[in-house]
View 1 (cartoon, rainbow, N blue to C red):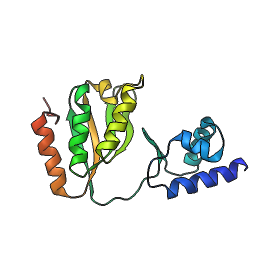
View 2: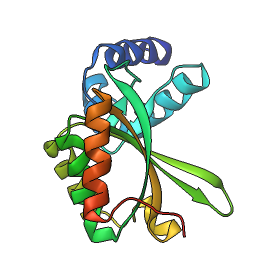
View 3: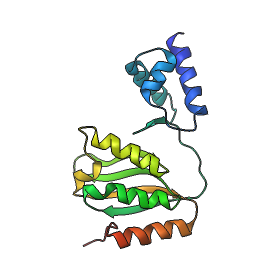
View 4: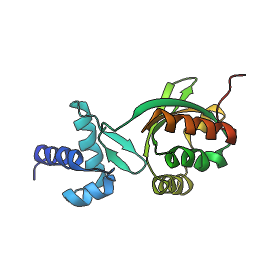
Length: 171
């Protein structure tokens, strides 16, 4: 298969996929190296395709049910799992994490976490890598974009985050 055909097949594969797909799985699927897949994704993005790289793999944006909200949080690194569980336990999807960097401006990390399993996989990846969570760049202050099935679910998330002491309150 030539490179152009592979990229077209890759785009179709990602379009059909309901879950994030790791680059290594795509490499095996198309019998190329992981680096070839990374390059193909870069070219597809340059061509206008919206492909997000999440901790669990590549994913295309999907229209989901519910409304999108932003939550400002502040907590210690060891509380990251509890914070994310509060959101997914209320039926919300944690779309991303955002920090305001003094040099680079807004930095966003795609998450796409919808269940405790997703949170567990994310935390395992964090603990098994040398990478640090984005919130450590801003002394724990960060935003999450969440998609919640209802305003009530969002209000429950806010109330539980506040009880846990995770909501950011401006000094």
